[in-house]
Length: 104
Image (tube, rainbow, N blue to C red; front, side, top):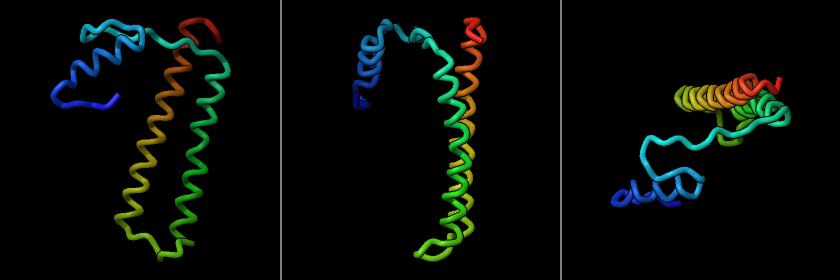
């Protein structure tokens, strides 16, 4: 759904209803159920960071448009760092959920 600044809360409420929650603010959407396939998928996603670093390195040295500036390199690395942290948090969430549900 698209965000509408004048009707933002109505949009969020509708999204909660679609997800099976209720429209009251502060209510939680039910936790997802995970299995070993989800865990394996998230481990593979974390490994994607190595491929991302390889792509950045290739661009730094072989970009037909010329070398990246220090600012460009810094911005790309900051973005990759945030993406990697997000992937790790998702992996940890799946792992913790499976531990709590005694699936591993």
